[in-house]
Image (cartoon, rainbow, N blue to C red; front, side, top):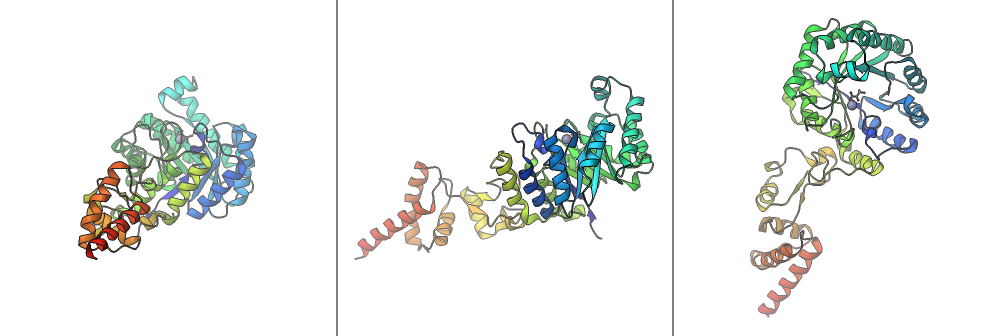
Amino acid sequence: MSKSQVQIFDTTLRDGEQVPGCKLNTPEKLIIAERLDELGVDIIEAGFPISSPGDFNSVVEIAKLVKNATVCGLTRANKKDIDAAAQALEHAVKPRIHTGIGTSESHIRYKFNSTPEKILERAVEAVSYAKSFVEDIEFYAEDAGRTDNEFLAKVCEEVIKAGATVLNIPDTTGYCLPEEYGAKMTYLKENVKGIENVVLSCHCHNDLGLATANSIAGVQAGARQIECTINGIGERAGNTSLEEVVMIMKQHPYLNLDTNINTQLLYSTSQMVQHHMGILVQPNKAVVGENAFAHSSGIHQDGVIKNRETYEIMDPSDVGVTESSIVLTARSGRAALAYRAKKIGFDLTKLELDKVYPEFLKCADYQKEVEDEDIEKIVKSVRAQLEKIAS
Ligand code: KIV
Ligand code: ZN
C-alpha cells in the first residue's frame, strides 16, 4: 500500500520567532527560509506581516526567494491584517493566507468579549475576504484544543463553505492529551460536511511536553499537515519539533505516512537555527541534541560496538550526523577503550589493554571525559614500560 503524504508546515520564522530574545533580521530569515526550502518543507510560514514593517519586509523577500514551498503569512480575522498579508505575498509562487480567530469559551468571552455567533460571522468574513486575494486559505481556530467540539465543527463547516482549503486545529495552550487530540480530529472528520475536500492540520504546543505525541495522534486520526518548528522552538515551552515528527514517521513504516523532508539535512539545519536564534538545544534533545547518538556507559558501548542497532533506533547518517560517538568516561568499559584506541592508531594487545585500562580509569575519575590525547599519552607510556621490562 502506498504511503500517505503528510505536509510539513514550518513555522520557525513565525511561531518560533515569538520566543523572547530570538528576533531575526531579514537577511537571517532569508538564510533560514532558503535552507527550509532545501530541506523540503511544504509550507513556510514566513511571518505576521501586519505586526511590524520589518516582518512585512521579511515576508516580501521570502516570497520572492522561495522557489518550491508555499509561502504563508499569518493574520487575525480582520481586513487590515489580510490586506497586509496579501500585499506581502504578492510575489510568492505559491501564496497562502493563514487567518483565524479564537473559538474557545475563554477566548470568546474574555479575549473578544463576544458571542459564539459573532465569532462565527467574523471567521467566515475573514476567510471570504482572504479568498478574494489568493486561492489557498488556511483557517486557524485558536485554542481549538479547549474548544467545544460541536461549536468547532460548526465553525469548520462554515469556513469550508467560505473557501478555506486547510483547517488548522491548534492546541494553543498545549493542554490536550494525545488521545483527546486524535479524537478531536476524528470528530471533525465525522461531523463536518465538506471536510474531505480540505486538509486538516495539527498545530500543537509543548506546555506539557506532548506536542510531538499530539501531532502524531492527529495524523494517525487523519490530519495530513503538521505545523512545527526546527528544534521545537516557540512560545513558552515551544511548538512541535519538526525533526521529531519527521523521524517518527520515517522510523515507523506501519504508520504508512511519509514526508518530503530530506532528513539528512536535519542536523545541520538544527545547528543553523541554533546559531542564528541564539537558542541552544539541550544535549539530550531527541534527534538533534549533542548526546542523541552518544554512548557513555560500558554496557551500552559494548553493545553498540558489536552492533549499532543494539542501542540505536535511528542511523545517525539519516539525520546528517556522521557517526555515533563513544564517549569515554569512568563508566566506560574495556571494549570502548580498545575501540577508541584503535580508531586513533593503537591496536592494543590483551596485555597492553590490561595495563592501559587501570590508567585510563584513573584519568577518567580525575577528569570527566577522556580525550584522544589522553589515550595516546597513556598508551605510549604503558608501551614504553612494557618495552623496558622486555629488554
Ligand atoms: O498556537 C496558535 O494557536 C497559533 C495560531 C495563531 C495559529 O499559533
Ligand atoms: Zn502556535
